[in-house]
Image (cartoon, rainbow, N blue to C red; front, side):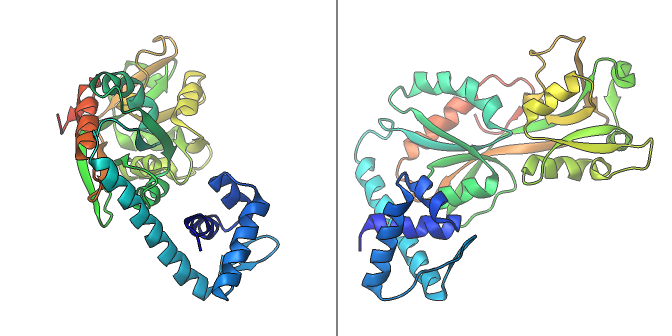
Length: 307
């Protein structure tokens, strides 16, 4: 039994597919399959039920995979404990970010962090919150940038800034001369939103329940985009209106003849962006350097919660 074999069975249990697991482990599928069959023969049990379209974990396999995951986490802890004796800023930091934060924070963060910690490059992954949380728990990421609420056992969170939402409209829209827009008015418009799985979509629907409802003829409807950038382009082309976190509104990117940014009437909906990391992560100075660097990034529309 080897650590490599344990990594393989954890990957198959996660992906439910030998080919995808092999790709995740950067090996060929035959190499992974042979290693797992060897481990099954050594243990004398079947870990996976192999079907044509799906791979499922057997009951005994579930217990073994869970134990394998714990073993791999402990191995990672040994590595991190060893690295803690070195300069904590003299190694890469594996940082995850949700799709609606990364493109708008990272361009300003990278140069600031490079100046503060030139020997600590970032290995960056963008993903959904649930996937980032899983990778953080399993030691595949060191820290993640997410939107609150976020509650995971053994994970520390630090609120960084509160970000209000704004409304983006085409320049020719009838609202162009209005100073602020009530959320209820969005229900009568074609509203462009992210697809299911994005936490920002859920936050928008919480602020504007009518935005997710298909109306009768002449009333509002909802269209989906794959990213905030795609949605912003669609608004600029006149397809509809949208709600964006203020850092993604792109005030510097388009001339006023293409889009206009409008405030919500009253108290605007907002989100709180936070940094999360494992309580046992042995490089607290790296987390602190990251926090300080984020605090120096120029974002004029947000309310700082941590400097």
